[in-house]
Image 1: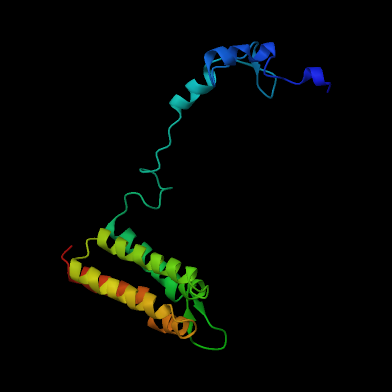
Image 2: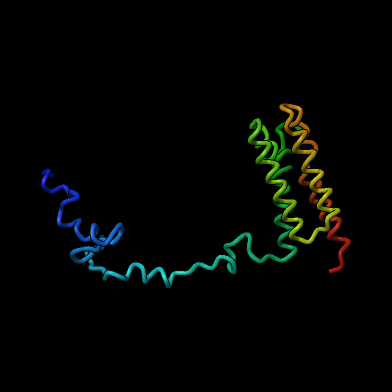
Length: 179
C-alpha cells in the first residue's frame, strides 16, 4: 500500500465527519455485507428493534419464577455441592466445593462465605422468618470466622457443614408450615 492511499485527516473522505461532529460520518457509496449483498442504510438498526429476549418467563432462566418445591430442591442441591459432594478416598469423610475453595487463603474464605450468604438470601426468598434466618446467619458466621484460621479452619469447615445445617433448619421450618 502506498503512502498516498492511507487515509489522512485532510482527505476528502473525512470531510463529512469533520463537519457533522464525531460519529456523523456517513458512507459515500453502498454498504456491502460479507456475501456481497447491498445493505440499505437504516436496516441494521431497524432489525434490533424487533429483537427481544425474554429470559424471565422461559425455562432457560434459573432465577425466574420457581415454585417453592423447585426453590427448595435447588437450595438442597447447592448445599450438598458446597458441603458433601465428594468423598475423601479411603475414608468416609465427605467434603464439598466449599472446602476446596477455602484452601485459597483469604479470597477463598470470602468467596465460600459469599456462597453461603447467597443461600441464606434464598431461604429468605422462600419466606423464612427472622429467627430461622438469624440462626442460618450464625452458622455462616461461625463457619466464616473459624474458616479463616489457616489449616484448622479448613478441617473445621469440612466437619461443621454450615450449609447442610442451614438446609436442615429451613426444612424443619417448612415442614411446620401449612401448605
